[in-house]
Amino acid sequence: MTSRFTSQTVLITGASLGVGRTAAQAFHAEGANVVMVARRIEPLRAAAEGLSRAHCIAADVADTGALRRMVDECIERFGALDGVVNNAGLHHRGPLEKNEAQALGDMVDVNLRAPVVLTRLALPHLLARRGFVVNVASLAGKVPLDGAATYSATKFGLRAFSLAVAQEVADRGVRVSLVSPGPVDTGFIMEEIDRVEDIVFSQAMCTADDVARMILDCAEDGRAERQFPEAGGRLATLGYLLPGLRRWLKPMLSARGRAVKDRLRAARGAR
Ligand SMILES: NC(=O)c1ccc[n+]([C@@H]2O[C@H](COP(=O)([O-])OP(=O)(O)OC[C@H]3O[C@@H](n4cnc5c(N)ncnc54)[C@H](OP(=O)(O)O)[C@@H]3O)[C@@H](O)[C@H]2O)c1
Image 1 (tube, helix red, strand yellow):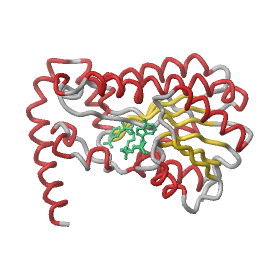
Image 2 (tube, rainbow, N blue to C red; image 1 turned 120 degrees about the vertical axis):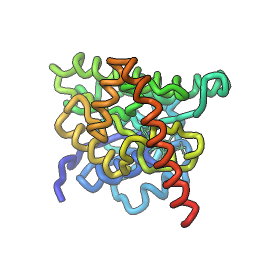
Image 3 (cartoon, rainbow, N blue to C red; image 1 turned 30 degrees about the horizontal axis):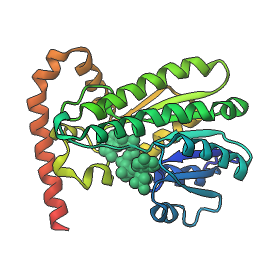
Image 4 (tube, rainbow, N blue to C red; image 1 turned 90 degrees about the vertical axis):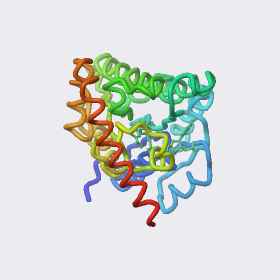
């Protein structure tokens, strides 16, 4: 086992479940102190069980005061802040008019506003330590996903923020990266599979381990972007650049995704 993050302190939002939980455990296994954030304390404590250098904070990333306290607690508890993983995410699914205005605003707050504000608040500490930020976006941040317009917009925004701020701070030694997964086998999509857009399942599914690996690799080497699956990421870029191609491919990809979804549902039912 390598120890790429020995004595570093990493703050991870959305660390009680799925990708964030796996990433926090992986950072800890590689020597880091981990500060783990989620709203509900019990799943958070369960995720931190057995981790000797973990500090849990029950907080909502939509709250600016809470973001400030998170940064302060990293310094109070571990004396420094070397890295931030903006991972907490929210998806109210369905077409625009099927969602309440408040729910759409909440999605912007959690998926876009919180990473921007937390990165800003952490920056003085990251500059002092030549640290890193890793933002967790989505392939829906590379190609517009109709049926998920607001979610897609927040992830496009996060990608733009990440790539732009990476350039702003690169010459001062801070690395800012973006990780864009396709479908990940977590509760985020699997617990509401019927409401997930069919086309999402046309891409190969990855695991929380796959995404955590990308996060740690970005934290180490500062590569601006990683995506999974690689082919899905390239197709997303092509679909963004060529809307006509996107519209032409959509029925085929949706049918492929529907078939995968049916198989996944059947497998879950059989369990
Ligand atoms: N799963 C996928 O298919 C997929 C695909 C592409 C991108 N992503 C992105 O990957 C990231 C992680 O997703 P996941 O699949 O690991 O999701 P998940 O399993 O549902 O976990 C979400 C985590 O975020 C926390 N969280 C949610 N809202 C929060 C808030 N307002 N403040 C603080 N914590 C909050 C949750 O805990 P509490 O509920 O207790 O707060 C939980 O720890 C998200 O940004 C998501 O958009 C996921």
